Length: 125
Image (cartoon, rainbow, N blue to C red; front, side, top):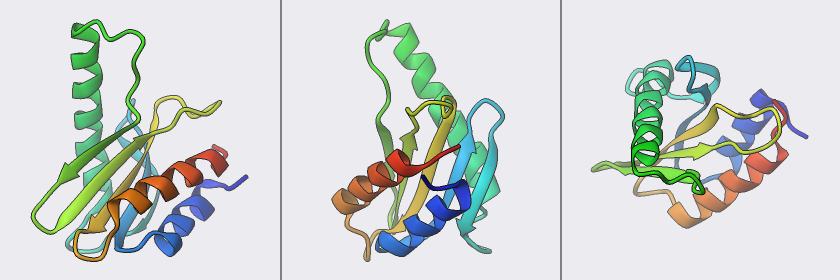
């Protein structure tokens, strides 16, 4: 089992094109850990903003009465980047999501999703 820092470092090491990664608590909007980012990608701002995205989707699913459904991941495609949000499902990880910002020209989205799922399965919060 990997801790938060190890899991985020694994994401940056094994997924091509990662610009930054974070583990986020969507109840508070706080990043529990971050790796990467920089002056053009403030991961604490991204964590808070993507919390709003997650909350909005959960609210919409509730209004649509999607009781037997859950969010696997959310993809936001920008001109030069992919932003990938993966909801954590394991024991003790309710209310958390992994966030990845990827360089669109260097990333393989299918492989990024596959690796993120693997990292999620190994993460111990």
